[in-house]
Structures are given as C-alpha cells and as structure tokens.
Length: 198
Image (cartoon, rainbow, N blue to C red; front, side):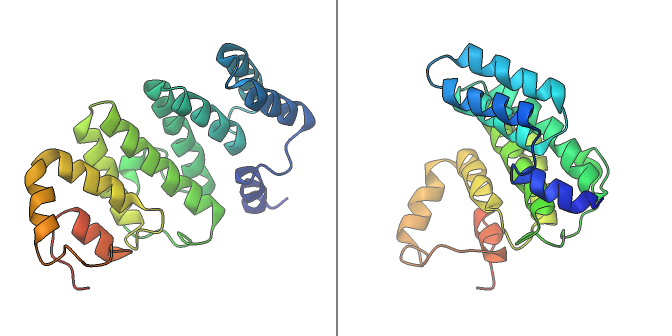
C-alpha cells in the first residue's frame, strides 16, 4: 500500500468508499436548498472517514460558502493536522520548520497543506484575529517562498488593512502604478511593503 499515493488520490476525491461518496454527492445537491440536510450528510461522511481530505474539503466549503467562518476555520485546523501527518510534519503548524516545502507546485499533499494554511490565515483575518492571521501568513511565506498558492495576496490585504488608504494612494500614483502584478517571491515582497529585486 502506497500511503502517499492514497493521500494524493484522496485529495483529488478518488477512491472514496461508495457510502462516503454518496453522502458527499447528496450534500452537494442539497447545499443551496437545504443547508441543514446537507450538513447532516457531511457529518455522516465525516463519521465514516474523519481524516479523509475530500470529506474535510467538502465540510470546509459547506461552512465557508454558508458564511459560517468560525466553523470553516475549525475544519481548516483539522485539515492542517491531517495534511501535516501526510507530510511527516509536526501536527501544530506553528511548529513546522521554517523552510520551503518541496512540491509546492505539483505535489497534492504539499499543495493541500499550503492551501489549507492559506485558507486558515484568510479566515483568521475575516474573524478579526489579526495576530493569528499574521503568524499563519509568516509561516506560509516560509513554507512557500515562491508563492505557488497565492498567499501573498492575503498578505497584501492584511497589510492594506493595517495602513489604510495611504497604501492605495501611494501605489496608484507611484512608480509601481503601471507595472504588472508581481508573482512568486516578488509577490511576497510587494505584499509586505518591502522592496523586491524584480
């Protein structure tokens, strides 16, 4: 049994047992018309496979698109632990060593972890938990310095919220006004207001 390949398939929603697949499909069908019934199906899927990435993704989306941000963030916390286990990382994201994760561009396990951390940071911002958001974004920058999952955009929003309209006015009329948006490491530098080498 190849545990890494199994996790990769799970992230992509492949190889689900029929009962779990049916519960997720029914939840998706009911999400717009009967959110409570949809949640019941998701909870059934979660009881059958509490650590399955596809179940966690579906539960996260249900809460997120239903504007239940605290519940979405709690699901993201669970998903971070599952993703950390798949990568052999410490379960607490704050304890993950500050170095780039290989596979940020193509590896499903790595991308799952990074996207969940990005979502966690975003939800922390939305839930008015700025220290948690900042710390999660610092960790995301350490793990994804090339910004493969777009975390620099969340950092730009965070910085803009701190400095207000002065950030917009300065960038709209300054030397960066007509430049293409930055990507990769330059995006992190620009998002945090630091000069970049691009």
